[in-house]
Image (cartoon, helix red, strand yellow):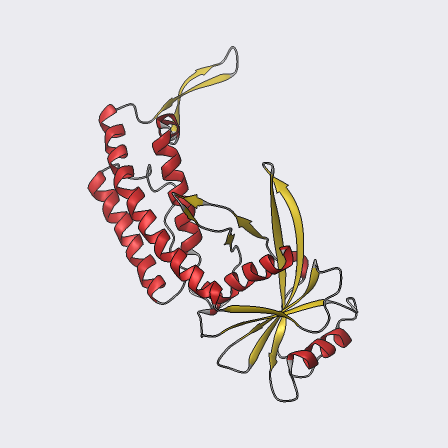
Length: 281
């Protein structure tokens, strides 16, 4: 075990997938964004907006505005603290869904749940009907959508500004000689204020989805090192190779921000995105 190492993590095979996802809002390119799908122990769970918030419970414009504005107030509070995730990715998903519903009223109608209407025993077939058939309710929903889209767009712009600012402050630098094969290696995430360096093993793969290419990134937290005059990133790399000889000549990248950031909600996910960009360059 390398000197200075005092935390460990589970197997790499159990870690979830990080996937970049391109999203465009008007002329504003929101990404590629990272959908961060991991759980960090001892981190408060942030309340997200239900995926079915538009059609569940009472369908009333005033009530839905209350639900939405309460959620966006929490988003703003987190953005004020420079905490981007998971709310930023959540905003992207809801905005895309609302725009799609507005562009296709059939999708809006299909979004409603169904109930069994008739059972055909002879053909073993069940007929269903929509729980909403009222034109007034559809008009109410259109009013909610027209109100909500600009709200989501505003907060997405705010989040994108924070994202761009944080990304511009990150430096991604190789430690030592970079091998030809860089799809596996280690990421050193350096805290700018403390003397801690978080060490992650990473695996990067390319895949195609709906004729678009994406790069996925699996990560495993190896441990936390205390930096010192002697225990430099270069020394950490040597010790890491000795402790984990499965990669005798790994690609190692150090990432550092020039300001202190919320680690789980901002620094870690954007650092991973920065590494993905570096590997794709």
